[in-house]
Length: 268
Image 1 (tube, helix red, strand yellow):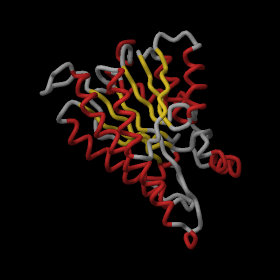
Image 2 (cartoon, rainbow, N blue to C red; image 1 turned 180 degrees about the horizontal axis):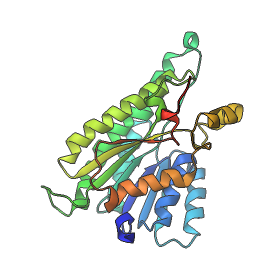
Image 3 (cartoon, one colour; image 1 turned 135 degrees about the vertical axis):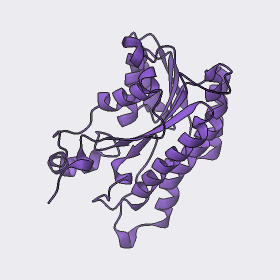
Image 4 (tube, rainbow, N blue to C red; image 1 turned 45 degrees about the vertical axis):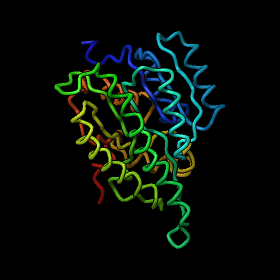
């Protein structure tokens, strides 16, 4: 049964893997025995701190920080080139990096759309596209199925891409709704080549992006979650490990709400 949820010997890339939800994902893969977990963002200090922390724990694998501005095309291309130098293949890509912008409707700036959609959607496509050849190499040259252990793409989406959010985060909620649809389209196209693509629609988790919101209204937010708590690092880590292991090898094109039931909470 242990082998059913194993990610042993797998090579993983987690964008934004040094902080918040991304830290939880990285932590999960390291604890579960992945061979190497690459974490990438433009924050060199946080990347190094996280990698040093993980590598000091005695886990069998190694956490490797890679500095890259994932909001730019050149930054993505540079990250892919660096991975291609270091690895023969990539088993799992977790597209976690993202940003947000909140402002009243009448004041919402055009620049917010460019900033949020570029990182949350456009460059997710670019990175997935450019890393597809490296992911295909994890299939051992098997160009036609069936694939018992496909490569995996995991999108970190949001319940705000499914429901109408209370906060005025127009670009963010739109970007996540689009990301969910992109994931389904990729599941169809890449699934035919041996790569699955699934989405975790996350509810409230402790993160830099959510910090101000939770500080202002933690009790109110928790009251809307049937399980009466916000998400913890192991919650998102467990879901990613499931999707990356044999247990999740037949899941493709799914959008999984990781929200404690907030989407189905009854409201008068």
